[in-house]
Length: 456
Image (cartoon, rainbow, N blue to C red; front, side, top):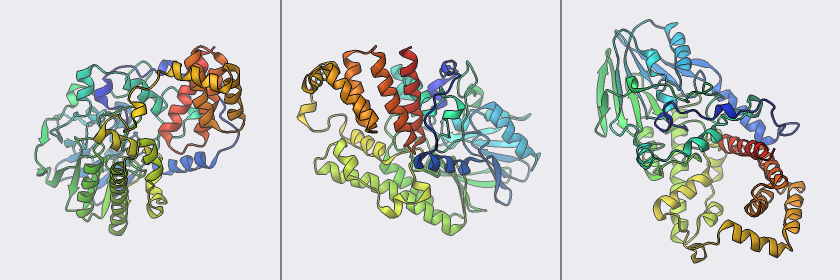
């Protein structure tokens, strides 16, 4: 999930820029919008009984939170994003049991899984378990003093959009951070006290015997929880009902796709009766779990291996996204639709992770600056007015990607041109309507609003 707590602390997420009057996207839903709305069924608020004494809260926060009931206490797996959401989850769990929380297990350090931890505290502070690499994704960003991912994170999450422009976040329901506050509320009191330091470790809490297993994937500090008595897997964000987010457009250090595939293979070997992902509805039944994890593993491994195959042919990232196509039997699965992650982003990230930014084409070693290239494009078009006419024609012809790219050339020549800003904003708005990926949709619409606001 996006915007980890370590990236934000209590920094505001630019909520104050939300504009009360929504921009009408268009009348009626496109097929992409309808598909994204259908995904809301995965995010409806409910508490699901997974097995005897095992329950999962879905939709009450942006991530799932689970409880296992033991002899004299409870083990909680992930705690939701905010105290407000966590308090609602606690209230639902208290309808089932009043036993104290003896331990909390974080599947990884993203704030949407850790922010609500204090709501689960009782008279005695529970043990808090996590991977020994807890928070490792954010460390290089902190060390560099890099903060811009917060802006991009707010865009992909849709925090600056009005409610009528947000459908969901692909694997999470629509939520807003508190006005003037950070997205994630937990502080030092929620830091882990116990750590998984090996590949696999058995623990026993409140009479509950669990195994914690290192499983790098969406983050390097990911672990999954195996409850052998009931054969339940708690996978964290290595699984949810969407194509996985092999790269987050808010910007992240590299996510190792090869290791993610290996972790999915480990999950599949447990032969579970139930699979609880970090988001969306659990998967119940041995055959269904086996099928889903097998397909999920095969999809991730295929993207990795086929990308490497193309790289060995000398293909550039732009060529690779045409070369690498998920096999139809995987691409058609409802739990591998690109609601949150997208194969193209994974392909580009794999290339960059192995070979860096240079695509192998010497033309790109020292490219012309955007303004210089734009001047030459305008000259080729017959002048700035002709380039502007081409952008307008592309927009009216529903050639929206080309319209946006032409608008970028024009904005390089005149960044304050209101007419061009509106062309790009409209192109992005139209692109959003046909985008099934929620984070891309939110990003398109947010930047469109920013362009319109800046040109007033």
